[in-house]
Each structure stands twice: as C-alpha cells, then as structure tokens.
Image (cartoon, rainbow, N blue to C red; front, side, top):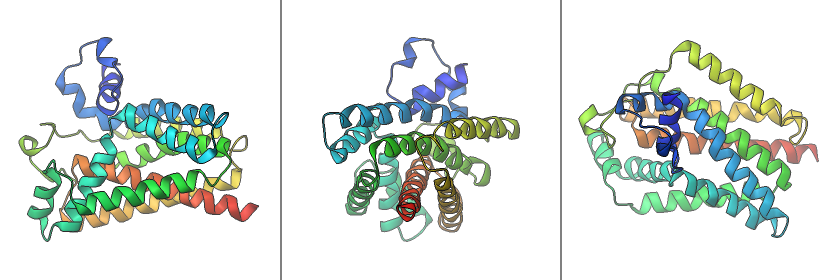
Length: 254
C-alpha cells in the first residue's frame, strides 16, 4: 500500500501524505505504480472536461480539463518535457544535454516545445465529441504511463544517484507487476471502447508504442540512458501520438 501511496504522492499534488508517512525507500518504486497515479489524474481531467462541456464550448472544456490535470500533477511532466526540448535542442554532446536538462531555467526550445505540445493537444481533443475526448483522455493517461514506465527496464539511469534531482534512482519493474499493470490498463480501457470510443480506434494504441521505442533508441544514442525529465517527456509524447492517431481513425470512420 505504501508503494502505491508513494506513487500518488510523487506524481500528484493531492495531500496523500496526510494518510501515512512514507519512507524514502518506497519512492524508488514510483514508476512501477505510475499507471495508478494515471487513474487519479485521468479521472480528474476527464470529469472536468465533461462537466465544463455542459455550460461551455468544447474547446474551453478541453482546456479546463487539461489545466485541471496540470494542477493536480504540479506540471511535473510538462516541466520534464520543457527540459527535454531544451537539453536535446541546445546540447551538442551527452554532458551538455544532461547539464541543460538539470538547469531550472527554461530556454527557447522548451518554450516553443510546450507551445506546440499544448496547441496540438487542445486542438486534437477539441476536434472530437467531448464524450470521446474525455474517455480518450482517461485511457491515454493510464495506458501511456504504463508504456512509458518501461523506460526504467530498457535503459540505465543516465546520472549517478547523487546527481539526480530527487536524489534517488528508480527500481526496475518486476515482470509480474508489469503483467498486473497491463491487465489493469486493458480492463479500464475495455470499459470505454465500444461504449464511448469506436472499437476500431483501439488500433491507435500502436502509435504510443512506436513513439516509445523511437525515444528509447534516441536516448540510448544521445545520453546512453534516461533521466526523470525523459520519463515525463516520453509520457507526454506517447500520449499526444495516441490522441492524434485516434482522431485520424475516428475521422476516417465518419
């Protein structure tokens, strides 16, 4: 239970810390339970979208839903995406990339990257009926966190533990827990496909898998590992590809 609470404390700003004190050692396993945090953040964003859509235009409802998730997570993943763009956009070698990503200041690559990311995210989700957008937002949050979490099994940490921002290195995900998480993701998505989302759109799940492996190859070549920023960036890029591909499939059915 403490391992799940550690993930909820790490990946959200919600006051789970009031429930129990969690020792630092449990935070080494937060990536293992990342999808569980996605259940919380995806639910918040989806319900805000649906609720706001009753009194506001779809595009405004989508913006509010996305903003709600950003507030709940403390922009943790978006910060990682900005650092990712700054590091790989401005760094010429491994040491420079890692140094830039660790810098707390945002640069031009980070700003431009976030602008395009949010523009595509909002435009994509607001181009579909709000019920579909909200369902996809919930499913995409959980599924893409599951996919992106596998980065800790495929790459080593690019820095030493003392050089990391949080002063810890994530543990690898055991095979049995991977299977349990996969079953959880499938069951949750099954509740929405065929009811709110066209069944054929499930093929969009291939997109984040492809993006994930491309990012893995790129990180291995550039910095020979991953960082916490890379985890957040990978998640958001995988998620965006899932929504874009879902929109393309749904449009082709109309």
